[in-house]
Image (cartoon, rainbow, N blue to C red; front, top):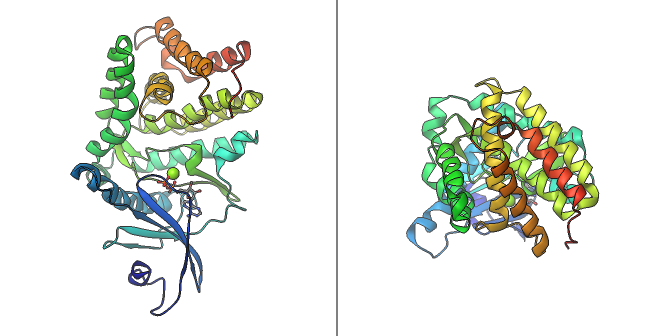
Length: 340
Ligand SMILES: Nc1ncnc2c1ncn2[C@@H]1O[C@H](COP(=O)(O)OP(=O)(O)O)[C@@H](O)[C@H]1O
Ligand SMILES: [Mg+2]
């Protein structure tokens, strides 16, 4: 493939075997078996849709490579190293991390392998990337991807959910607007267990296509949201998820130095109900909560939580621990219906 030669990874005339990996909607991702060993190549797909959607995936590849370069410099090993990038095909290459030694965290969590120490390290790595980027004007300029972040995060999650629940719209839209105008640090934007590999040296974050200089609370809330939702999917491991939630949040918050940790915790804890509901009624619902009773339970929890702690200054609403306690306790009292 020409891009591999342009990146200097394949010699002219070298035969390269390409093996596709299961990827998302906007990228091709494959392993290139080169003479020097395997590398992983991620390339933006130009979708034949409206112009804006055509551009976003290709630009996202460039932002992802830039994010990975920054994160590798400030948190070595916490992301795959960018080996080379190709502007012509909007692709970049990184080391291939063998799933045998780098399982996806989502699979481990599903199987009940809920290691609080690993969760703590995820919290620490995120905080390190945020701390190193906080208030840096150069990064704010480089990652001024506000329109993209709105289009692929705030709109499909919070704003779409506001349309599905008009009575909650003022709350959800206020959180969305506050997030959009909080520009403090370099945000990954997709810190989901499916984008985190559990490597022998600790967590490795992948898939930084949504990188944005914005609200670091978004990354924390986004990741914690998955630790809440997993307990509906696999209730047997509820306590393990709860411990991971606590250790991740505590490790992260103890490392916040660029602003009062309580401010950040307030933003994360008010994002969380919106993100929970977004994974049921937004444009990107989780694939593992399908049972009607479970979807209703999440809706009921969020409604009750928002009603019970009105006002952004409410003490409960500003803290993560009470929300997690209420969530996991609620699931213990009302065991969810079986999911696949
Ligand atoms: N460097 C890598 N080494 C091994 N597997 C990888 C690597 N990068 C990505 N993958 C695998 O490919 C999947 C999709 O990659 P990701 O960057 O998340 O793309 P997408 O945007 O399509 O979700 C990941 O979940 C992971 O399983
Ligand atoms: Mg991904």
